[in-house]
Amino acid sequence: MNPPLLQERRLPITAPACVLACGAWLKNTACLLDGNTVWQSSIHGDLGIPENRSALVESLSRLRGISSRPIQAVAHDLHPDFFSTEMALRIARELNVPAIGVQHHHAHIARVQAERAVDGPLIGLALDGVGLGTDRTAWGGELLWVNGAHFERLAHLPSLHLPGGDAAAREPWRMAAALLHRLGRTEEIPIHIAGSRFRLQCPIIGSSDAVTEIAARTIRDMLKRNLNCTSTTSAGRWFDAVAGVLGVCLWQTHEAQAAMALESLATDWLSCHPEPVLDDEIVSAGLNLDILMKRLLEMMEGAVDCGFQAEGAALFHGALANALANAAIEAANEHNVSAVALGGGCFMNRLLRQKITQVVSDAGLEVLTPVELNVGDAGLALGQAWVAASLLQETKAVEHVS
Image (tube, rainbow, N blue to C red; front, side):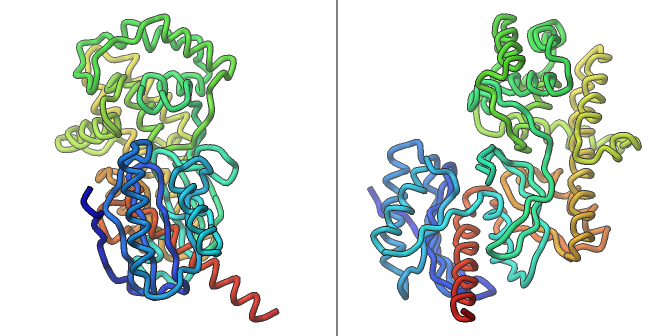
C-alpha cells in the first residue's frame, strides 16, 4: 500500500496549541494543527471499510512523525463507537495527553473560524446528514453560537423519526412516512407511499422499485408504536423526506442522490419561472416546517401529472433557505454578532447556499464559508483541532490565574 498523501497549508492565524485530530466516520481525514500550519491527510473515506481504517492508522502515524513540537492533545468526534474515536483515545494514552471530544457541528463551524481567522463569536448554520449531539441524539440542522472552545445550540430543524434506523437514510420513502407521521397523518402512510399517487408516470431518481403495501404498513406500525424509530434534526433527512413525499426518489442508490435530484429539479424550474411566493403563514412559521410540508402535500394531491415535483422542489428550497437565513439573522442581532458561518455537507447544494447567503448579506451580515469548496466531513478534523487547541489555551489561562 502506498503511503497516504499529506497536504500542507497555512492558516491566517496561529493555533494556541499543537493538536492531532482524527476526523469523522464518513469522508474521514486526519490533521495535525501545528502553529499556523495544517497538515491534512487525503480522504480515507468510510471507516466501516477495513482498508480505510488502515489508511487512517497510517496517516496518524505519519502526522505524529512530522510534528515540530510535542502534541498537546488528540481531538475526536463525540461518538464513542467511531474507529476515529478509538484511535484518538489510544494515541492520547500513548502520548499521555488529553483526548478531547468535539461535537460534530461545533467542529464544522470552528473550521470556518480557523480558516477565516475570526476573532470572537459568530453564528453558525451547520447542515448535514448526521452528527451526534450533546444530548446523545442525531443532530444535523443546527443554528449555533460558536466562540472557539464553546458553543450553544440556539435552534434546530424539527425532529423527524428514523423508522428502521440507518435504513431510513438510504430509503427516502421511509422518511416520507416519518413526515406524514409528524403531520398526524400516520394512518394515510400506506395510501400515500404504496398507493396510486406514487405510480404516476414520473421520472423517478434511483431505484424505481415500488414500495409494497406490506412494507408501508410495517413502517406505519413502527411509527405508531415508536419501535426502532430514533429521531433526528438532520437537514439531509428533511431533503430525503421531501424527495420521498414528492415521488422524486424512493430508494437511493448512492449518497445524497435524493437531495441532488431535488436541487436539480428546483434549479431547472427556477431557470424559467420566478421564485415561488412564500405566503405569510409559511414565513411566520420559520423553522417549523409543518406548514410548508402541508403545502407540498396539497400540491401533490391536486396534481394530474408530474409538473408539481419541480415546483415543489423550488418551493422547498426557497422556504427552507429563507427560514434558516432569518433565524441566523435574528440570532446574530440578539447576540450582537456580525458574521454567520456556513458548514456541513448540505451546503454543497448551490441553490441553498446562494439563497441563504443572499438573504443574510442583505441584512448587513458577513457570510463566511470554508476556504475549500468541500464543506462536509472531509474538513471536519481541522475544526476538531481548533476547538481542542482553544480549550487548552483557556485551561492554561485559568491555571495561570489560579
